[in-house]
Each structure stands twice: as C-alpha cells, then as structure tokens.
Length: 203
Image (cartoon, rainbow, N blue to C red; front, side):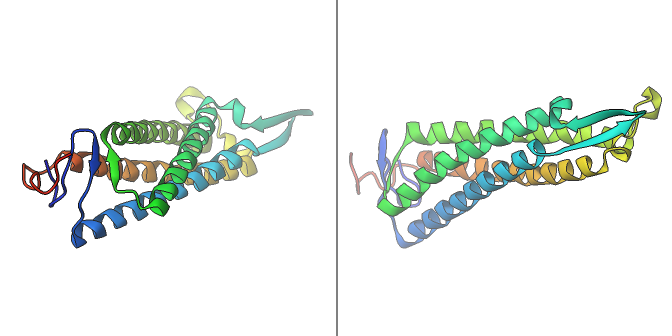
C-alpha cells in the first residue's frame, strides 16, 4: 500500500518521502508538538488554579471555607487536566526524540496506541469542562426554582479564580480535540492509497 508515493509495509512502515510528503510530515509533527506542549502547560495551570483556590467567609459568626473539593465537578476537572498534562508530557518527549533522530519508521501498533490515548484524553477533558461549566453556571446564577443560592455573590474571589481555571481547561479540551484529529490523520494515512509504490519498496 502507499500514500502519496509512500511505500507501506504491514508492520513497521519505512516511508520513502517525496519533497511534498516530507513537508506534510514536518508540518504534522510540528503541529502535534505545539498542541501537546499547549495541553501540558495549560493542563497544569488549570489544575493549579483550581487546587490552590480558596476563600473564607464568615456567615452568622461561623467561618465557612470554600474549596474546590466542595464541588465534585471541580475535582473531576483537576484530575482530568492532571492526567492530560502528564500524558502530554510523555508524548512531548516522544515527539522530541522522534524529531531529533529524524525517524521515518512508523509502527502501526504504536500509531493505534497514540490515537487511542488521544481519543481518551479528548473525551475526558471535554466531559470535565462540560461538568465544570454547568456547576459554574449554577454557582453564578443560582437556581431560584430549587432555592439554590448564587454562591458567587458570597465567594467572589473563589469564583473568579475557578473561572480562570475553567477557561484554561476549555483551551486544553479544544486542543485535545484538535490533537485527536492530527493523530487520526497520522494513523489512517498509513492505510491510504492503493498498490502504487509497492514496486519501489518491498519489506
């Protein structure tokens, strides 16, 4: 099989690049590296902003401290972004090593593993952002029908910092979705094309 003149073997895939294909590969690798660095950095930032956030309010001479663990959605957000950041850090190291070595061999099992991992990260971060956004709306606007108070009226500083963390997490989730598309391209191009190029490389 081949893709744009690329010879493909069933297992490890040595690729004979033309100028155009080399350019495409380079752009894909750079885009992947940038996205993974962005996810790693902002994932850590989102987790730190939420975890370190707290505010003490005195209500009827009783002090009440607002913390992220009081909202399960924020706990999920912290865990999801922590996992995404750690996963991205490992993948950044892989990308850097691959680019330094100029490795053109690409294993299909490895491609499937990366694709699957990126898909899991995308679904997880999007779910965490959705849950946190819903909880944030309730905290900001309340729910009069259920007599839920507008918590942010009392804990303004706490809500503002949580909002910054959620905003960072939104960028992380969008980046993971974009990255899942990049990894899908990197995987499924190995299966593209017909039999053209078989004669140029038999492995």
